[in-house]
Length: 515
Ligand code: NG6
Ligand code: CA
Image (cartoon, rainbow, N blue to C red; front, top):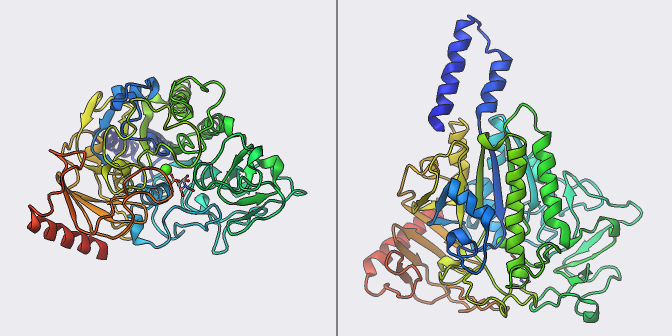
């Protein structure tokens, strides 16, 4: 694909010379722009390494996602940069590890925009290269200036100020207020006679809360999530007003597919980049009627089927528009899986033999691989690497520099510290990939991966996620060292056997932290 792009550019130059024209003809430029592949990046929420059938799940079928893997490359050694959402997304969009910036842990729903509007971003780079850029779905990177979002006015800065041309957002997460969509700078369907108010410190207005009125709940919280009740579900944070703007939990995926289709259809004569950031399979897991009870695993399984439906709809849209031959599709997840993440939705009771992490240790929040080793599938439009399984080491922080290369942006500014150009990995040509990478756990230690070694820095803290989900955090007072090749489940701590390695990795991590 890289070489075919070069050929197209050469042909363009030759055709210009033939015409003996000094200025490149505008139509030729347009044609060259159109040769750049569209990019559809489906970024799922909390989907585990073992949650889909093409990554080994046997209790659930995900045919649309499996088809992507069959026609593309499935990466089995790829990592989100963190074990929670906000830092992973921050890295994807900025090309930097989030722990470099304070306050990039799980963001509250009234967080101000976490990405500096002056910095290099993935959508910004693609925009420079002639792409029309859109983001649809979960944002969770904050909105608005220092005082947070002006919910009843113009909500800015946000995605449009960091390189997106269009946005249709769940501002934070499905379990955080306000439960409304934000399109570009405004809440959708907000009635000015019923202004919206949001508060993350204390109750605001008179809407019932899960704590005070549990009898009103259709889904009961298991941890936290007992503030304002919206659609029978109590959330994190308090809100009141904006009734006409409230989303319907059961149709969120349909809404996101619809807005994605509209964005795709709106682009004319330009390549496009669509970041479709699904709410599935995050809590609250409210499957549409089409999927309720269909997985035999309860809502968590049902929303995996719903996610597969989303992928199918997007693929059908691309096919029907004749765009499949010129669209690169990426499918991945922002962090590892969690079973009970705060609501009694039978996820544990009905799990059966299903292993969301595919057997990896830990899960969402954790320093162990279950926290940030994620499925990653890339389907190239020309069939490059069709059916390949790659074990090359890859980090999502590398998309920025890799896509910059793909679209012909040669110099990425030096505010991008961590993103490496790993286009050859994404093309399936480089089978080794990164030498090393860093994983960020929630509240806790960083891990340093080099080759098949993994070092987890020593840090004192609770062994299990303190608020409920039975997940090992990775906190340990002494260093941990695992040989992932022979021990992918991180069972045997080899730190005492290899003190030199521990010392070497500790120093390397320290140097990287200072960069
Ligand atoms: C936790 C929430 C969890 C989820 C997570 C963020 C509780 C008890 N748990 O604090 O439900 O919202 O934050 O998930 O409130 S993430 O995928 O967006 O990072
Ligand atoms: Ca997440």
